[in-house]
Length: 308
Image (cartoon, rainbow, N blue to C red; front, top):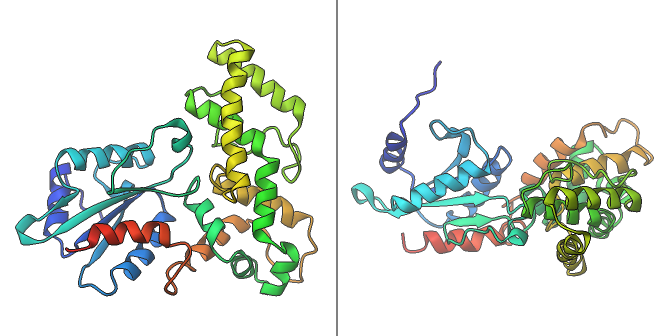
């Protein structure tokens, strides 16, 4: 059956004519159940209905963060972020991965646009969810066995972020200057031959030389750029925010490498653990009041929906 496709104007009209009041626009597949769970909790005491829309669901959209942000700007220009069509109050909120936008100075300021507090939603879940239970559910092992594999998840995260700090700094320089020479957040570290260990200084130096050449600047100028990125990364680790610039999928890669050298309980499933783990962490969201993963988003969405 062919899905009905609206024009841009028709899409807005479909929102206005629906029975929902709060519309959340998200980037990807994992964001959709996360926001759906969260909104159900935030609006539980009200009569407001909500709808979560992946950006690919918008007519003609190819998806992705650039499309999400351009759609947000269009809604803002056309005064569709908050309106009262046909007597129905409605509000729109857009939820985006922060990526390295705070370092690059490209954050868009609006109460209707919420960025993840960490690099992306996946890294946010890793920071605040119960990783022992998530590992237990995704691998088919007990919580006690999960604790044997990673006794202190937060300490393990900090150590991995520290091991990859040079790669994060290189990626931040690359992103902030829009130069791609192989050190980007889309790739796992190319300077950590062993993903579980510290970076290779020779490999780091090679990327520094390459980046400086691509930027057309001398080494002294490049070292200043790199030092600023390195300070941002080190600050995040030192202040217990190791996932601020550590991508969620990187964690999945490092975790898979870590599991490969652990004693595997009989009948446990360690293969392709990342996709399952991400899903089990989302399943923990909004299960009870005071959900650690909800607070950053909950307060902002509650403020937007107040008084509707």
